Structure formats: structure tokens, C-alpha cells
Amino acid sequence: MSDTDPALMSAEQLLGLYARRRLSPVEALQAVMERVARYNPWVNAFAMLNPRALAQAGESEARWAAGRPMGPLDGVPVTVKDLLNVQGMPTRRGSKTTDATPAAEDAPAVMGLKAAGAVILGKTTTTEFGWKTPGDCPLHGISRNAWNPQRTVGGSSSGAGAAGAAGFGPMHIGTDAGGSIRIPAAYCGLVGMKPSYGRIPQWPHSAFGHVSCAGPMTRGVRDAALMMSAMAIPDVRDPFCVHDEPRDWREGIEAGVAGLRVAVVRRLGYAPPIDAEGEAAMLAAARVLSEHGAIVEEADPELPDTRHVFGRVWGVALARLVNTMAPEKRALLDRGLEEVAEREGGMSAIDYLGAEAMRTEAAHAMARFHLRYDLVLCPTTPTAAFDADAPTIRPTEALWRDWAPWTFAFNLTRQPAITVPFGLDEEGMPRGVQLAAAQLRDDLCFRAARVIERAVAVPVARPELQAGAQACANHHH
Image (cartoon, rainbow, N blue to C red; front, side):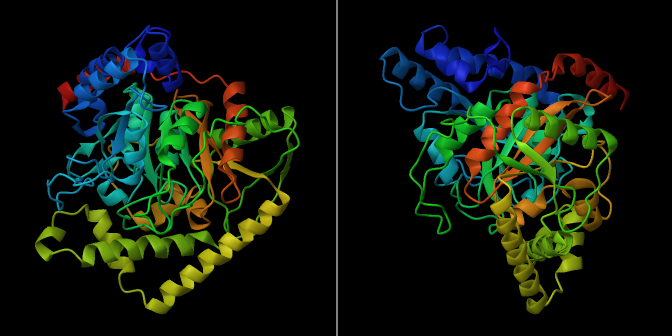
């Protein structure tokens, strides 16, 4: 993190400086906005900026000056993925088929952040309705990776990944139905936490409501835990939310992993692909945990083939989305989304309920596995970030081969899973490793991720080095 540029500071650093009157929320927001002005033209992280951000920062500054901060995030800049409602701003979901009417109320996660005093910087881009991993959408075009503009940021929380890596403030809300927080976080060198299902309430539910979660994307593990503390407030609008007492998820985060049992997992009902550098990162992470006192061994949770289960859940959700749309609007959709909907739309109710039964079976197998193991360690993605301009070909196969083979099983089982950066590959692109724990044991994910984070120094993206390259590329186009 930077000692001098507030845009690159962690939320904890900002809050410490606010408390000591060494920095004001307005100064912090201005530092972030300067970076947005400089780098957003080519990373393309935002669906829209919040016209009230500066006023919100000013209100926060007045509260700090009076010695009465509103909550644990007062004055911290935060972005919100454009699948979630922010009152007074439209929710376009990356689609030309949606309308620009401003939302009447905040989504639960947004409400929690605002109640904690966070300043909403703007809404970040998403793939259309959050349907895929490549970071582009019909409405806002391609979002690019601050580590290298030729590479994708991943999706579907594309703009959140771009914003986190480019230094547009410390905290970003993503959503994750099959890996949409963890994949862009891994590609962009960020921490991304998919909490236990229902931990962070959601309303309205997305097309993927029964597997999807909102969660934090940050540059550090402690900030992710702090952000989750503000978002994980029970909300009566979400009938599936977990009614736990609100807590500070940083409590116990430094407790380490001594005595915890960790399973290194290579199969999730099938053998997901992993390249040599991803394999090396996973094994190195296993050594780190072992050196810190964890009992680490390879094991197989013996899940049913999760490809068949998730493919159906995903396909049916998209088919339902497309089938409720007026025919003239369908022509505006991302072609790949329509292709998946057409391919899966003819599924019978019996087939679908069969997939749902297999999902329950997978959750059961994983719950039993966690009687033996506290944590699962596996890769987050099969490769580093791929080409941002590559067309989306055969999305159903790409899903379980190239995009999300290591992430979607944990959506099916509804357990918490976190990705933490694990260095750079030979081409200077970030790699991440993933840790999953039993349902509702989100604390164990944070603890283990914190051990890895402290052991592995990860540099920060340098978009100033990339901006020139991108300007040249645009000039040649």
C-alpha cells in the first residue's frame, strides 16, 4: 500500500488518518477521483459515477471534525457493482435491454455500507446480467486489467476488479454466482470473498438468486473482513438471509492456522484444468500453511460431477431471463447469453429438479468432508487473465474449462470461499489461491487468507506504466 497516495491506502489506514486529523474524507475522495480521471478512460471500470460522492465526503468530514463518526467506514470510498441497487442511480446490469429509471431503494449490502458511513464513489461495470467471465458487456464495452490492458479483468464483477487494481479506492462490492467475485479478484491481484450463502442479504434476488452472493473485493484481507462486517446485517427483505448477530469479522483474524486441517483438493467432481504456474502457487500456499502449523494433506471430497449440475442451474436461469423478455429486446442481448439460453431452455422440469438434487448431494458431501477438514485449498482460476479482446466462443464449455472450473462448486454448496493473491507469473500477471470452509465458517477463510497474505508480498498494479501503452494501442486502432 502507498504511504502517500490516499487512493492506494487501505480502508484501515484511511480511518486511522481521519481519526488523527491527518487526512480528511474529502482529500481521500479527491485523490481517488484524480486516479479515476487519469486511468478510467482505458480500464473502463465505471457504469456511472455518483454525482453526490463529494457531498457525502463533505458530510463525513464534518462528522469527523465534530468527533462523531457515523460508523466503522465513515468517509471510506466504496464502489458498487451495477447489479445492485443504489437509491437514485439506475441499475442497468450491463444490458441495453434495461431502463435508466433510478432505483427507489438501496440493496441491503449498500444500505449496510451507507449506515457505516461509506462514500459511494459510483457503480462499476458487469458482464450482461452477470452471465460470464470475460469482462465485457453490450452496454459499456470492455473493461481492462490495470496490470496489462491487453488482458481481461474477468467477470462478472469486471469493473470492481478493474477499480481495485487501478487504485480507485480500497473497497468494492462484487457479486458471485459461479466465481464472479473470486475470478476478477484473482486476475487483478485482489482479495475476493464469497461469503456463506445468506450471510450478506440480497434484494432483489438476481437471475441466479439461489447460488449468488454479494461480497467484498479489496486489496487486503483485513479490509475484506471490515467491509463484510458492514454488509452482513440481516435484512427482512431477503427471506434466505442468515440471522446472526452483526460482528466485526476482523476479530480473531490474526489467530493463525496452527492445528487446522487443510485439504489440498484437485477434484471437484471432475478434475478442473490448472496450468503449471497455478499448480506451483497452490503447492507453495500449502507449504506456507504447513509452516504455520496447519496439518496439510491431499484429499478428494468425492462430489458428483459439478459441471452437469452448474451448467443446468446457469442455463435455466439465463433461459428464464431471456424468455421473460420482449422479442425486440432479445436482439440487443450479448449473443453468447442467448446461445446458452437457447441450448438450455428446453430442459424439462424433471431434468432441472435432478440437477437441484445433485446440488444438494454435493452440499452434503462437502459438509461431511468438513467434519475431517477445516479448510479446502485449491486454485482460483485455471490460468492467469486471458486476452480482453478475445471473442466468447462455445460458452457452455468455456464455463467449466476456461472460466470458472475451480469456483462454481462452492456456489452450489453455498459455503464461504476466498481468493488471496499469490504473487505474479512470468508475464507479470497476478495469480491467486482459493480457500473454502464449511458453511458459516467464514472466519476460517479470513484467518487462513491472512496467514498467506502475510507470508507472500504482492506488488500493486502500476497503471501509470500501462496507460502509455494503451494510448499507443488506441492510436494504432
